[in-house]
Image (cartoon, rainbow, N blue to C red; front, top):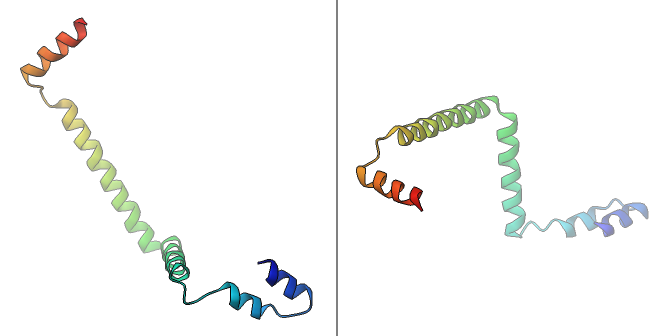
Amino acid sequence: MAALIEDIANGGNGLSSLSKMLNFEDSEFWKGALLGAAAVFVLTNESVQSALFKTGAKTKAAVKTGVERVRDRPRPASEHVEQASSDER
């Protein structure tokens, strides 16, 4: 990055330094480019945002329902005995 700024400060166009900085044969570059493109797509596409929020709301409701079912489920008698004996300690 410093070489790019120095090149531009010396009157160059910075393309040679920029091309050294961007190595298109590096797999990490392409992973970052794809991740960035996906993030831009999700953040700017209203139908994708709507679908994600609906999915999130459905997931939240399902988790809440599952927790309530577990809470309301009757416990076996053996658990009551174990609970009572641990409370006495």
